[in-house]
Amino acid sequence: MTNSLNSRFRNRHVFITGGARGIGREIARQFATEGANVSIVDINKDDLEFTLDILKKASSQTHYIYEADITQREQMKEIVESAENI
Image (cartoon, rainbow, N blue to C red; front, side):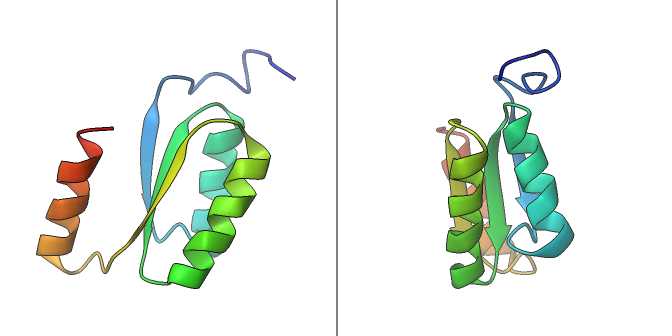
C-alpha cells in the first residue's frame, strides 16, 4: 500500500523521546507508517522493545531504540553521536 501519504517521510529519520508509550508511541507508529526511519529514546526497556515490535509491523523501514534518561546529558550525547553514523 504505497501512496504519497504513506511515503512522505521516506529517506527521513526522526527521533522521538518518550516514544515507548502513549502519545509518543503513536507518534512513532505514525511516522513509521509514513515511511520514516524512527529512533525512540525512553527509559523503559520493556516498553521500548514492545514499541519496536509495533513499528516493525507498521513498516519495513529500519527502526532503532535507545534506553536512556533524557535528563542525563552524557547519555543523550552518546545517542546523538551514534545516530550520526546511521
